Structures are given as C-alpha cells and as structure tokens.
Length: 359
Image (cartoon, rainbow, N blue to C red; front, side, top):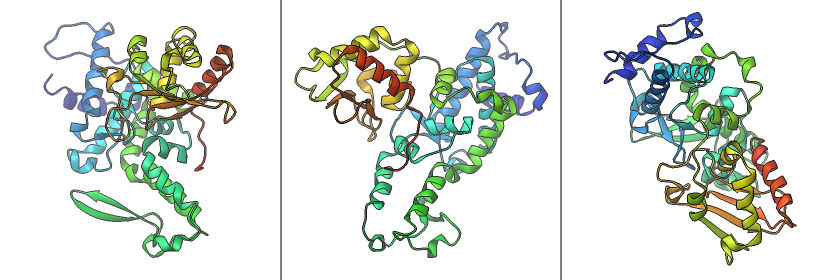
C-alpha cells in the first residue's frame, strides 16, 4: 500500500468515460480479499485522506474552520508532481463516491460543494470562509470618500516568500477604486477570491467530477446535502456537546437551566434526527464534521478553541436564529414556547444555503 495513491491515479486516469461509469472493483495487491463492499469502502477512505492531508499540498484548512478544506492556491509549488492531475483524479473519485454511495475522508468548504452543484457564489460565501476579509470589504461600502484609501483593482498574493500583485480586471493597476465603482471592485474581489485564484485546480476538479456524474442528476441536492452524502452523518455525542457548550448574553446566568436553553436541547436531542443534528452543526460551525477530540476542541477563526456557544437575543430583534460560523455561535431568540423554538430552528438550519449579498 506504499504506492496506493500513485497506483490509483494511474489506474483511474487511464479509464475512458464509458469505463469510468461501469462498476469499479478494487483490489489491493498481495491481499486476496474479495471486494464485496468493504475493500472499496476502505479504498475511498484511504486515497481521499491522503489527498486532503494539508501536508500533501493540494488543500489547506479554511481560515474560519480548521476542519473544512479549501484548494491551496499554491498547490503547483507545494505539490509539483502534476498537481492538476491529482485534482482531476479527485473529481473522479468524488463523483464515483457519489455514484456508489461511498464516503470520502475529508470535509470541503461549502463553496466547493456549491461549485460542484453549479450554484452561484455570493458574498455570504466569503464570510463563511474568511470573516476578517469579508469585514474589510464590507467597510468599503460605508466610507464616504474611498479615494483616501489609495486602492486600485489589484490583489496581493504571497508565493514562495515573494509578494505578487495580481490585476483583478484588465489594467487594474491603473484603475483607482472610487465610491462610483466600488460595487465593481467588490464583484472583482469576489470573483478572484472564490474562483479565479484557483481556477486551474477548480476546473480540473469539476471536469473529473462530471466525467462520472451527469449534471441533471444534481438538481435535487443542495450544498449541505451533498456534504452529508459524501462525508456521512457524524456520530454526535449529545452529552459531550452539552458539556462543551458556552452560554452568553441573557442565557449566561442560568446556562443550561434557562427555560429556552432546556427547550433547545430537548428539541435537538429528541425532535431532531441525525440529519437535522448534522445540519445544525453545518449552520453554526460551517461543517457537519465533529473534531476527533470532540466538542471540547472545536476551533474558531484564529485556530484557538472556540466552543459551541448559545447566545441569547431578544425575540423582538429577529425571529429566526442566526449563526456566526467563525465563532461557532448561534444567536437564539428567547422564544415563548418549545414549539415556536422547534419551528424556527428547523427553518433556520434547512434554509441556511440561501446566500445574501454584502450587507
């Protein structure tokens, strides 16, 4: 198994489109096991675990969530052995996993699931991946005179220790950002940050995926559902979750003994099935994955421990719960009844794929 990934890439990339969609039978050399499902399951886990490993160089952890992997813009330097071939291979493996109902070993950022599904990317996706960068863009919309910022239509990247200036539009280095064209500047940043920055890698990933999966077959899924199908429902220890939850604002004093908090845990523990529990995790933390060490080691945007937090808010401010994924925090209104909490919490976690503009 020393050369498992290399051998797998050679085999999968040698197949034509017709063969790619035929049944795959996996064998490990020197191991006489018959593939009745277990061997294939292990193979999907092993090859994706290697590819998503940050040490391999193709992916890096998201700024907001250490468990969600994003494409490494510098993958050509970090993994010089034909990095694009690996992305094409991964696309095929993900497509085949979806086809065969196999699980992969690695959670991706929500944007990548949306791009596999052909969903539009919004400023909300920037916020879910990098809260600090999102806030820096948001501030520009509120400035009276942008000329004092001396901005142009460029972005700065660091590669191999060197800073490189990238034009966001043609002639961007000579185009000043003003209050009149700030909307265009924001759109250019969105396009570059979420797509153009990793366009070659993303293109190969999508090509590989669609080598296997017909696009019409994806119309019934959303990004959260796709993650759950590919990564599986997490094993959630409710006692561990409760024990490692913090409470703030109007729930801080009483904590778990507050009536609304008691309703919350009753709803999650008794009314939510495994899928809704996973969707609640996606809503609040950005991914359905639970760290191997449990909820006690849940990390925030800065890489430090940021435990799941229930923040109390006045129900008159807004009706539905809101999430802050960079802080693993849910803003939970002080509802009048358990039924009202159940109804609104279910709405929030099932509607969380809907993106909104830059507020």
